[in-house]
Length: 123
Image (cartoon, rainbow, N blue to C red; front, side, top):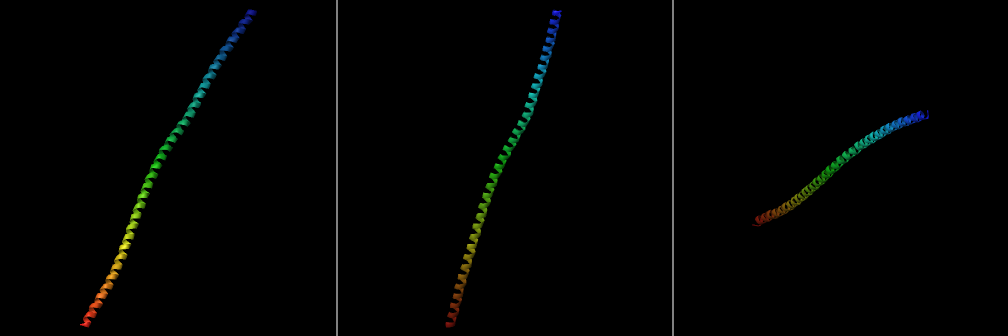
């Protein structure tokens, strides 16, 4: 009787150990699966953040290039407008000079006509 009780006890203990080992393996497998799923989920977010950062870097580089190009174009336009303004001033100066010469020539012409008329009247 004692030996049968001992055998039953040992058998139940063995079954409990097997059940405990099975549950331990299931828990380990579930923990591994959970860890893998969490890592995959986090990696997707990290990969998306990395791709977004690369896109931002590329767009920032393009923006910098466009801003530099715009700055050069604006500088060229300013230079052209300045040259045009200078040319207009020169044309204005030439026009004033021509008007001044024309007025002087009229004065000289009037003086010559007057001298000619006075010379003919005296003769």
